Image (cartoon, rainbow, N blue to C red; front, side, top):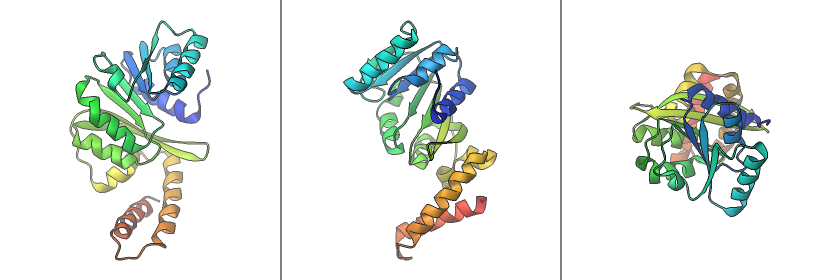
Amino acid sequence: MKLSKRLMAIARMVQKHSNHGELADIGSDHGYLPVWLVLNGVISSAIACEIADGPIQALKKTIQLSHTEDKISVKKGDGLQPIIGSQLDMITICGMGGNLICQILDRDLSKLAVSTLVLAPNVNEGMVREWLMQHGWQIVDETAVEDMHHYYEIIVAKPGCMALNAKEIYMGPVLLKEKPDVIFKKWKWQTGILEDILKTLNESNEKHKMIHLQHQWLKEEL
């Protein structure tokens, strides 16, 4: 099974931090990620979760075609609710905005005992980092990938305390330290976007002040 560049980057992060236990993939879509992880021996088993009947049927089809029915179960439900009570090593949440990821974590994560989160928001990564910091999770790894002209950041967190400043929340503490090549492309792209927004805002506007500060942070790293 061949994964997209985005899913492969997520799979490699799971591989790097897995204890070979059970993984729950929230918003699993077609189930390509858990199937690849099982077929490649990265995890022992998986729970693939979706909220709607259409994706559930797509999930079941992928699992049947890959002959992984004995290691991947499908559960229907909202967010983390289908896996409450499960013994899990890792949870992956990918392919949705940072705001929705935070809502999902806020609602039910405290009801679970899990050692690792792998989160790949499409947008609003800073919101996810701030949530993690405020709720007793420590970012231990980050990477970035470009796929189909879009940039994705992948965040790995484990239970623990951390104190991030505003720049680290916005740009990522590990990304700022390790600076993978692709993140420079994203930061350059972000800089252009912010410059266009700044042209439309009055300097006295509070939003202008925040965006101007973010623009400064980006320019410092380029």
